[in-house]
Length: 218
Image (cartoon, rainbow, N blue to C red; front, side):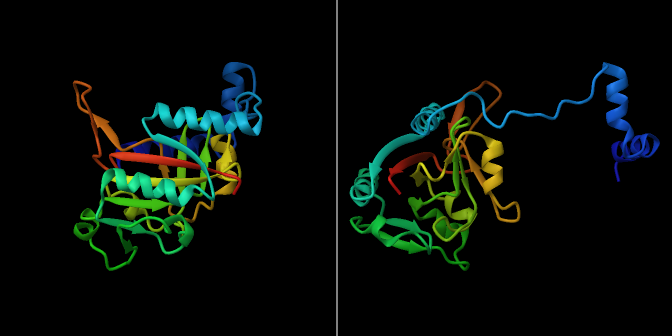
């Protein structure tokens, strides 16, 4: 136990379980406001999807829009443009999504090592929910998304978002849909970091390229 833990523990015991809010009210003359906004502003469904696309692009994700009929051909073109030899496919990915693509499919296996995954150039997944206000995709390890590592090791990630069913406005709305016991991965744009001189480097701890497909009418 650190010194910080000891000090904070003494403060909690001294105040008691209900004294901290009361101390705040006495100091500032009013109770803590817990009526947080569930979303910022009022938008139609179409405007919410547009905001998602805008914020995804602001994070340097590449955004595409298509329907179920054209989706296999779009994925085929996106993969062909990068020329991958191997593509990772989660076990529950809808088979029709990859029906037009040619690269060899590598299935998500528990036995796969990080070195084996590093030889795979691309991965195609679905998602659990997409947050418009923050431009965030959340994956929860469902069958169409696979385990967390398959979306962190390959350099190129194609993520399909079903519109409008999987799109929400805000983080609170997303949390209501998610199971906290599942392995949640929150993605806002491609993986990137900056050094002390603010030189941006992409692909450090996740895909260098993130392509998001907004799938209409699903």
